[in-house]
Amino acid sequence: MEPVHVAFLLFPNVTQLDLTGPAQVLSRLGNAKIDLVAKTRDHVPTDAQFDLLPTATFAEVTHADILCVPGGFGTVAAMEDAETLDWVRRIGTDATWVTSVCTGSVVLAAAGLLTGYKATSHWASRHQLAWFGAEPVAERTVFDRNRVTGGGVTAGIDFALALTAAIRGEDHAKFVQLSIEYDPAPPFDSGTPDKADAATLARYKAMVAANAPDREARVKAIADTLGL
Image (tube, rainbow, N blue to C red; front, side, top):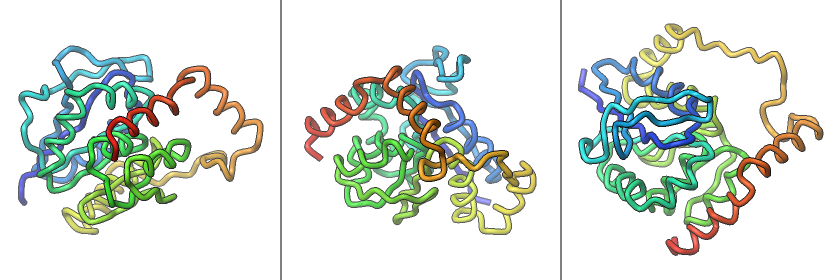
């Protein structure tokens, strides 16, 4: 079984499940090494009020078989940081698989890695992909050549199982699915904007407006500056 090195970008205010969900799945690829890569080895705060500890720095990881960029409110600052975007660009240029979960796809797009590719993202940010030359697709997991993008947060597990199947075969992916007992049966049917009621959707939009009131404008400004 060929070794696989998976490098996850880690940045402040990351949505931890975007990272830890697929990391759990991909760690079971067999002969896999998982790195959480940040600018330094200092603890990195997540949006879940606990920190994650990087296993490597940008300087220490110069190649990976799989690059995975998670999402979260911290993606905007990550895109505004030249060192972070440069590392994503360098690793993605020669990675076998260039992947993301949630708004991590917008980071890939800002790095120029999704230009001319179909991709998905969290439903509230999917339209932003077009600003960087990508083609937004409203699907939970999107494959376009060696680019694989997952939708919002929990889609990271689906994405990782699909990628596992592409790398190790469907039988192994089914084995991983069973081993983590991935058999979702949510108690509510409110996981997409077309299924959620109006009050729930309004509450979500109010939360975003309160926590990231300038996010849309900042992402558009990044796109305009990069000219993608």
